Every structure is written in structure tokens, then in C-alpha cells.
Amino acid sequence: MSADIIAPIDPADEVPDIRQVAIGDLKHALVKGFDDFRAMPTHVVFLCLIYPVVGLLIGRLAFGYNALPLLYPLAAGFALLGPFLAIGLYELSRRREAGLDTSWHHAFDVRYSPSLPAILLLGGLLLLIFTVWVAIAHSLYVATFGYAEPTSLNTFAQQVLTTKQGWYLAIVGNLVGFLFALLVLMLTVVSFPMLLDRHVGAPSAMLTSIRVVLKNPVTMALWGLIIATGLLIGSLPLFFGLAIVLPILGHATWHLYRRAVEPDSHPRPAFRPRPRRIRYGAQFPASLFVPSAVEDQQTEKGDRS
Image 1 (cartoon, one colour):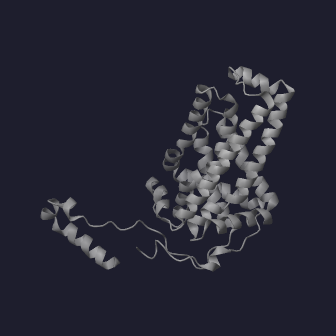
Image 2 (image 1 turned 90 degrees about the horizontal axis):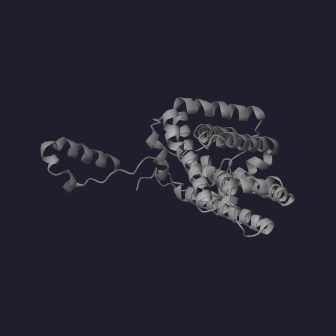
Image 3 (image 1 turned 90 degrees about the vertical axis):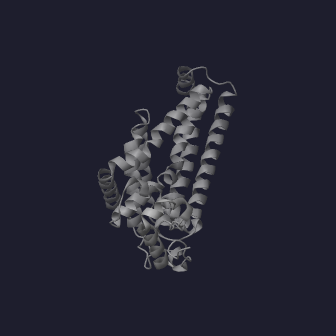
């Protein structure tokens, strides 16, 4: 296996220096994110159509299985998975910044990253947080209204908005949701971009993210508010606005990472796909008529070895 695919972790890269982030840096990140979106609109919209589709599926499940109390927790909690689901956007921004090809399929080059196990581990943690949030939200509803499910959306809306129990549920539920959102923000504000940029472990990436938030509490709180407002606006037109809002925020997150964390003093070589093994049987009988193709592959393999 190539040395630029799997490389030992440099302890010096585990604890990078953190910069002071000003409000102007947030504006810079958003402007750069919008520039990336304009430069790659077809790619990012294609990649992010999954967001509105999943949003509609959440609504269909809630209505189809008479689980209206879970509609808001599922829709709001889906944002908890956003940092992981936007991993392809970070990769496209990284490639554009480096002057590399930004064709849409390169968003999936993340699978060749040396930090892929750490990325999957952190993604699994977000999935666990999402599951716990939904379970707690449902428990709050049951504790307030019992196990009886509302018969329609209008009934559910009246139940929540016109009764003391409903206002209690809305206030407490949103406070609990805020704590979950704050937790995810602290753990992931720069974690996933850092895992793409450096060969570090998930604990180091999360610790760096926490250090960024603690060093810049006001700025990071404003960044969280920007994300929440953007997601709310994007969700209003049947979630389809997320196909625009989420790519911009995803690209901006990469540029915010660049502003918040000092560059790697020893950057590792860019990861690339593993070389294909030559399958002579699969190339027969074409190899009889185009022998140069096989010879070129053999020469290329010899050069890599």
C-alpha cells in the first residue's frame, strides 16, 4: 500500500495552534463558501438533493406511521448529522483551494483518506447523539401528553400551541435541543475538515474543535446562530431550500477551519485512489489487439513500485 495513503500520525499535528476568530472571519468564510457554490453549482446541488429528499421522507414517515410528535424532533435532529453528511462538500472546497479538479465524483474521494476510520467513528458518534435526542424528545412528549397520538396535524398544532402543556413541551424541548446542538457544534465545528486536511485521530480533531469554541465563544455562538437560521430558512419551502443553504454552509465550514486553525507545518501528500490491479483475464481478448495499453499499465505499476 502506498505511503501517501497510510502514513504515521505525527504527534506535532495532533495539537495544532488555534487562531482568534473575528466576526470578519465568519463573513470571509461565508463569502468563500458562496464562491465555491457558484463555481460548483451542479456538483453541490446534485450532492445535496439528498437533504430535501430525506426531509420529505421524514415527513412521510411521521404522517404515515401516525408519529406526528416525532416530526419536529426528526427534522431538527437531522441537522445534528449535517457536519458528517457534508463531508463531500469539504473535500470539494479542499480540492478547489489546492487547484485540483472539482468534478462531482471527487466528493467521494474521502473514502481514500487516511483518516477515514476517524471520520466514520465521529459520524457514528453523531448518529448516536441524534438517536438519543429523538428518544428524549419522544419521552418529553409522552411525559406531557401521554401515549395517545394526535389524529391530525391540526390537532397536534392546537395541542402544542394553545395549551400550557404544549408551551411547556415546546420550551423544554427546544432547550434540550439547544444543548444537543451546542454539543455537536463544539465537537464538530472544525473536526471533519481537520480530518480531511491532516492525518489525526478523532479525539484530537474533537479536542481541537472544542479549543476553537472555547477560545472564540462569542464568534462561535454567532456561527451556530447563522447555521440555525440558515437551516430554518432552507427548511421552510418543503426542505428544498436546503439544497442551496447546506452547500454554502458546508463550503463555508471548510474556510472557517482554515481561518481558525494554523496551517499544518508538515503537510502530508494528497491522498489518491489506490492503484488498480491488472487483471489479464478481464483484458482478454482486447489485449491481443491493443498490447500497448497493457504494457503502459505494467510500466506504470513498475514506476510506482
